[in-house]
Image (cartoon, rainbow, N blue to C red):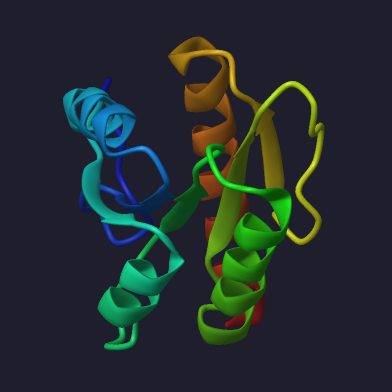
Length: 131
């Protein structure tokens, strides 16, 4: 798969994970699909890394933390990166994480990849409309 951002480069995905082993395998998989990926483990680490402005195309918030913890991360991202789409990976018991632009029931890459493509397209549409 050959994906490109609106700027013609590989889309930059920042993932916030709460399970380091899973994060590494997801990062490797996304890189193979044509994405640039940076991962932070936990909200605190993500906030430190993102405190310096980054040119992110998409955020992915992992599933393995309480809904309240993940919700705080989504709120922080919306405040600090309002134009960047957020995908929340959700365990089966939580169908939607409030505030996320896209919610994906954790079900494997065949579910996540089309949502990522849709989120990137929606982000490009929003950026074009704002100009």
